[in-house]
Structure formats: C-alpha cells, structure tokens
Image 1 (tube, rainbow, N blue to C red):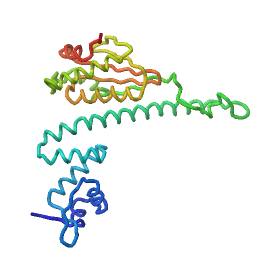
Image 2 (spheres, rainbow, N blue to C red; image 1 turned 90 degrees about the vertical axis):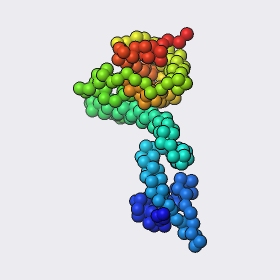
Image 3 (cartoon, rainbow, N blue to C red; image 1 turned 60 degrees about the horizontal axis):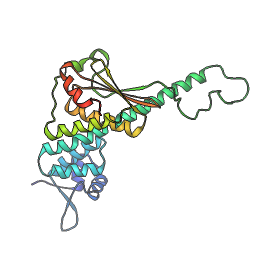
Image 4 (cartoon, rainbow, N blue to C red; image 1 turned 30 degrees about the vertical axis):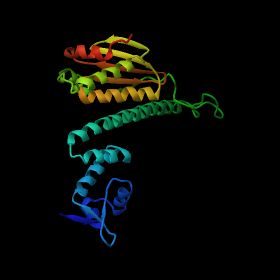
Amino acid sequence: MTTYRISQLAERSGVPATTLRFYEDAGLLPADRTPSGYRVYGEDAVERLAFISSAKLLGLALEEIRELLDVREDGVCASVRARMLPLVAGRIAETHGRIAELRAFLAHLAAVHADLSSPAPAGACGPGCGCTMTSPSPTAGPVPITLSPARSGPAAEVWRDTPVACRLGGAELGERTEQWQQLVGKAEQREEIDDGVRLSFPAGAELAGEVAALAAAEQGCCAFFDFRLHLTPTALRLEVRAPESAAGMLADLFAATA
C-alpha cells in the first residue's frame, strides 16, 4: 500500500503542505502518525483531495464539503450525488442573485454616466446636478434573469423540443408540488401567458432567492420548463413556460391556490 509523507502528498497533489495541515485541522483530510510523529497519508488521500478541490470550485463551504466526504465514505455514488444536487442548486440561486445585483448596478452606473455626460449646471454642485445620488432610481426597468439553459439567440425556443420527462416520483414529486403550491400562494397576481403562466410577487431579496432556488431545483429534474425571473426595485415576476405536452404538469405545479 502506497503511503505519502506530507511533502510527498503536496508534490503529488499540487496542494501546499500548509493547506494539507489546515484540511486535517478542519476534519477534511485525516492523517496517521509515524512513531516519530510525522504525518502519513494513504493512497486514498489523493482522490480525497481531488474531491475537495472540485467541491471548492463549486463554491461549497467547508462544512458542506465535510458532510459530503462523510457521505462519500459509504462508497455509494448515488448518495453523494443526491446530497450534492441541492447544494449546487443553492449556488445557482445565489449566483443568479449576484447577477441580478450586478445588472441593477450596471443600469444604475449607465444612468449616472448619462447624467454626467449632459451639460453641467452653472455654478456649484446642488440638488439634481447629477454628482450626488443616494440609490438607484426606483423607476428602473426590470432586470431579466433566465433560469433555463440556451434560451437566447438562435436557440431561444430549444426548450420546446426538450423531452418532457421528470426524474422525481412518489413522495419527492408530492413534496415538490407542495413547495410550488406554497410559493404560488405568496403571489399577488397570477395570469395565463402563451405556453405558461406569470406570477407576480412583492419585491424582496429573500423571496427572490426562494423563487430562484426552487426554479433551479426544478431544472435539475424537469429541464423542459423555461423559467424567467424579472426583478425591479418594487416587484418580482416569474414567468414559467412549458411545451404543450407538459401542460398538465404546468397546471399541477402552478395552479392558483384557494
């Protein structure tokens, strides 16, 4: 059985020895000790480090990586994938949220740039001169976020040709349906649109994150749905579309609640 000293493992994996010590302290990378007190790692440490590095690239926290490693110890890939799926869905939602913030900030910067490019008033700075702004204008237009792949450009309608199939079943499907129904119940308005439905919610970062996370999770099992989230300073709107053959599933998930 191949074993590595810490310097050898650092060279083999490309991970600095200081990081290996940190991983040990964090409970991510166990090490044995020689009678002289030197750290010794087994061959499995190389694969374990590759898994840790991969998880870090996904933006997972150390606590989440530690939990995944515990699941991985059972040797069942399906269990690891099942635990990773909601974690990755959560990162997708967070990323969409950051994208929305950056788009809103970009629109704000563009408005400020336009104001500053206009002729300056005579005299000193004052109210309305364009040099002082406290927050983005509440009348800014919506910030669209597409929560489904390949929905722009020449492939804008590719979702129509996506096979209608859902990987959930039984209790999982019932739980997902209940989650959507609870979310639909929070909508201030529900209206039918071409191929789908539009839900309007009160504005709020927490609710926007909830909508995005659930839409991202739904994409993981039902790729034929097309989700489009629009954010403004005063409102949140979700548009959901599906192929005609999935009209029944669309109605089950997004029907108006009593």
